[in-house]
Image (cartoon, rainbow, N blue to C red; front, side, top):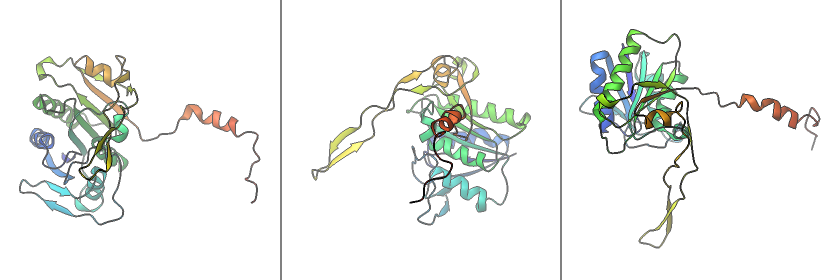
Amino acid sequence: MRILVSNDDGYNAAGIEALVAALRPLGEVTVVAPETNCSGASNSLTLRRPLTVRQAANGFHFVNGTPSDCVHVALTGLLGFRPDLLVSGINNGANMGEDTLYSGTVAAAMEGYLFGVPSMAFSLVDREWRHLDCATRVAHDLVARFRDRPWDEPLLLSVNIPAVPYRDLAGFRTTRLGRRHPAEPVIRSTTPYGETVYWIGPVGRALDGGAETDFGAIEAHAVSMTPLRVDLTDHARTDAVARWMADRVSAPEAR
């Protein structure tokens, strides 16, 4: 099995190094990851400058771009083959609820999924890398299961792992995304030159965190597995929009 690995924390992050070590017994692993930390980059692509790809001493390829850049370049010219699975992570922190819209970790997996490659994004719900060994075992378990029981069609799976010892995991749950309260206010500061600057504030607390959500699973010390889709259409509201426009003429008036 050929596995493409990427992340958003950068090619030298502890999470990707541990992930690759866990996956190497399962197949041929190739790493294409950002040169620097790109947390919060979402699905952005670099279009106004060229990208460079270099290779580190450990064999990892790194790109001076975003997570989506890395996967895009890998799949459209760098690799020369189509991977059987794309794995992104292990992220330094949770990607639950609205986090998935901003996450570079999820974006790297989504880029693979857009090219028809089955993709998994792994996130450890701790920013101090506590119990990273638990997260790597979970990643190994799920990728091994994919090897033995591949999906019938490509899937985009976001996996969040609680920061507990592996023996204390309360199983695996298939979940939906929860919701957060709005983010905390920005943090205002001043540079030594007197210029006012702003830091984005902390994420909001869980608003919708029922047992069936990613928040609920993590609260119960279970691994959360959320299948994601790219279609952002609010299908339940299409009729409402059509009714809202019902009394308008069929064609815009000439100006």
